Every structure is written in structure tokens, then in C-alpha cells.
Amino acid sequence: MIKNISILTLVLFFTQSFAQKTSASPYSVLGIGDDVSSKTVEEMSMGGVGTATNSTYQFTFSNPASYSSILLTTYSLAGQNRGISLKDASGKQKTSNASLSYLAMGIPLGEKGGFVFGLQPNTSVGYSLIDRVLDSNDEVLEITGYNGDGGTNRVFLGAGYEVVNNLSLGLEGEYVFGNINNSITNQKKDVQLGTRYITDTRIKGFGLKAGLLYKKELKDNLFLNLGATVQLENELDSKGHEYLYTVSFANGDSPRDTILNNASTGFYKKPLKTSFGVSIGNPKKWEASVDYSFHDKIELGGNLLNNSPKLAYQKGSKFSAGGYFLPKHNSISSYWDRVIYRAGVRVEQTGLMVNGTGGSGQFDAIDDFGISFGVGLPMGNQVSRLNLGFEFGKRGTTDNGLIEENYFNFKLGLSLSNKWFRKREIN
Image 1: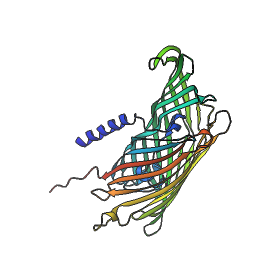
Image 2: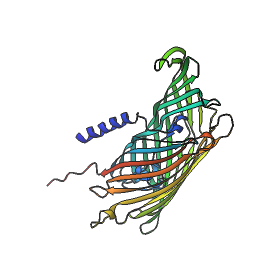
Image 3: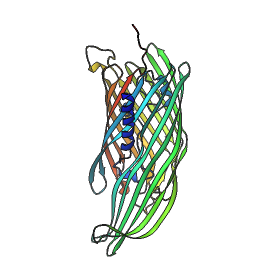
Image 4: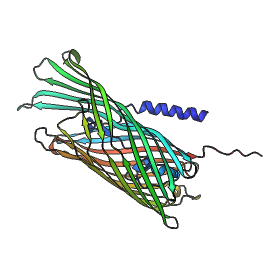
């Protein structure tokens, strides 16, 4: 009973915490915010690979077919701290934030199946930008401020089952929900009143992902794994209000007359996404993996979701490579021989195009590159671990008035595995 109450308390705590701002990126102004990686600490530490990973004691979120390999009840939770150095043509600025990453639980279903359910952030909004228009003497003619916060979360439930020897199929459903608040404040020189435009958006929708995983033993303890997933196209609906009113800056920041107060709607169409992966290794010693994914362009509409002429989408793709090394899983003489060492790299074309100079018609691709490493520290039994992950990356460009981000992610996760039900012995 105490364990059940503790888990419920964690769920409530995570639900409230996910509502907090988890992004400090100017690019979160676009669409419904920054995509938050759904990867576990273990996956992130290996460049994001996971489509063809087949672990018995810890699950990955990349492929629901891998849930068929869960042998023990597993609790998994993690948090992260993200530091960002922002750079444009005129200077640099640093920012950081901490957030919770996920809370999940995996339960075996007999010897050939398992399911996982959990909660994690899906997208995040957190930005504060100022745009100034100067005259020939560098005096300010106009100031426009852009601010936003909020984001979306997802609750998911997935199951995997080994339908025939070495071939597993999986299915995962998700419900996405959240709130996003955006505001634009404009003030012109020698004009008494400014204007402020605010949108308050509620977003919700469902998604579905299917996966398969094939495992073949090439020789003793050497396995080849092939994986694939398809995330179906789905549309998130948005409803809310838009407000436009005048603002007086004479005595602080005082709203004056309301110009507009309307209910409004919009949509965000998440495209079809396909992933393929291959891995090879000895599960108790090492594994090397490669993942490739691609998706169609995103579609969005309605005046709530920053459907701006400065923004365009195209098809995107991502390549990841990584793996792990475990010196000796059952070593009793050295703790460090039982530590899992991980590393990886990823290159991503996000599909996001931004026109930074406004009227030039020049759109620049916002690409992402990262390298990562981490460790899995054994705790108590052989399968529970404290996982640490580190990632260095770069996103964006300083060309055409845009912003380049150099970031560092630190993730800390806990994976606790044990038998949930034990048969009582009677003497």
C-alpha cells in the first residue's frame, strides 16, 4: 500500500512539474514550441539510437516492439538541465533551465510480452525576444517584444509481443495535451499608446505508433537486431482566445482599451514519421547501433500557432549512431567493470525553415548536431541503475539575422527493476 501511494504521489508531482517552462530557446516561438526528445537517458547517451535496441532489463521509448523483452517490473524516471549559449551577429547570451523528462513503468506480460505506460513533455515554449528598429542615427524608432511560455505533454501506453520466434510487434498510443501563451507588445517613438496582442491556446489530440523488432543470433551471444517504426500522421486541435488592446507605458505597463476579444481555433498536423534501425552485439557485453528516420513536412494553421510568413517547413531526417560497452556484467572484484559506458552522435535536418531578414525571401534551414556520452551505474542488484547522460550540440545559424544555439544537456535517470509479484514460501 505504501509503495502504491508513493508511485501515485510521484505521478501527481510529475504532472504538475511538466506544466512548468522547460525551454529557453528563441526557436520555441515557432509552431507549438520546441520538440522535447522522447528518448530515455540511455538512448540519449548513445546519440539517440533505440529503434533496434533489445534490452531485457531496461526499456527504450523508440520502438514499442522492444517492450516484449521486459522480464522484470521496471520503474524509470529522469530529469535534465539544459544550458544554452545564444549567438547572433551582434553578440552572445547564456541561459539555462532544469526540468523533469519522464516518468514511466514497464510490466512484463508472461514470457513473450510487456507493456509500458508513462508521462513526459512533448513540446516546450519559453522565449523572450526584443526587435528594435533604428534610424540613421541609431535612435530607436520602434520596439517589439515577443514572449511565450507553456507547452504540451503526452500520456502514453504501449505494448509489445513476440508473435513468432525472434519477431516482435508493438503498438503505442498517446494523448497530447497542453497550453501555450504568446504575446506581442509594440511601442513606437512619439506615440502615447502601444499595443499588445495575446493568444491563450489549449491543445489536444491523439497519436499512434507501430513497431517491429527482429532478432537473430549469428553465433554464440552475438545478435543482429533489425527494427522499424511508423508514427502515423495525426492532427492536434487548438482552441482558445485572442486579445488585442492598447497599453500605456507612462506609469509602468497599464492596459487601456480592448480592441479585440475573440475565440479562435487552429491546428497542428504532425506528419508521418518512419524510422529504421540496425544493431549488432553481445547484450551482456557491447552493442553498436545505427538509426535513420525521416518525416514529411509539418502543416499548421490558425492565428493561434504563429503561422507566420517568416516560417516554412520541409521534409526532415535524422541519422544517429552509438552504442555501449560493459566490461564484465557479473564482476565481483571491480564495481567499475559493472558500469555501462555509452557514447553516440546524431545529425538532424529538422525540416524547419526561417526567414530571418524578413523581406529578402531567403529561408535558412535550422539543422541540429550533437555528440553524447554517459554511464549506467549499478545499484544494489544487477539490473537497477543510476544513469547519467551528457550531450553537446549546435542548432541554427547566424546567417541572415538568425540565432545559433550551442547547448549542453545533462540528464539524470533512475531505472529500478525487480519482481513485482513473488511467490511466498511456506515452511
